[in-house]
Image 1: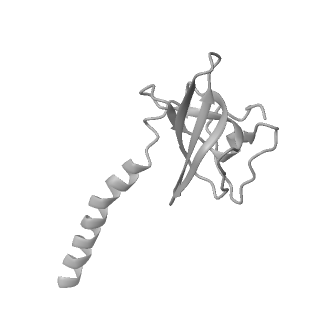
Image 2 (image 1 turned 30 degrees about the vertical axis):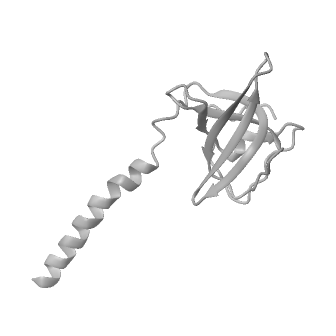
Length: 130
């Protein structure tokens, strides 16, 4: 009986902690139906396991710039000054940020971003011009 109760308690504890873990990986804040293409220069690249963040400076036609904060996953390291083209799923809030997939990024000169593992892009985004 004691062993059965311990298993029941362990299962309950696992169920209680699974919700926040799954919620952390939700993509609900990103608008995958209205993706946007960006070109810019990497200001900073951060690896915070298991996520990576690109801070991309995007220049507008009027000469002003906006820094986009973009979240994704890759084992590839980018460096400040790298010039990128990318298709992202923007934040639904309208703030300059979004999510990216490594297979939706290329360098401005057309070279693809090489990755050492399979990444999954957003649906409808396989036609990004590289």
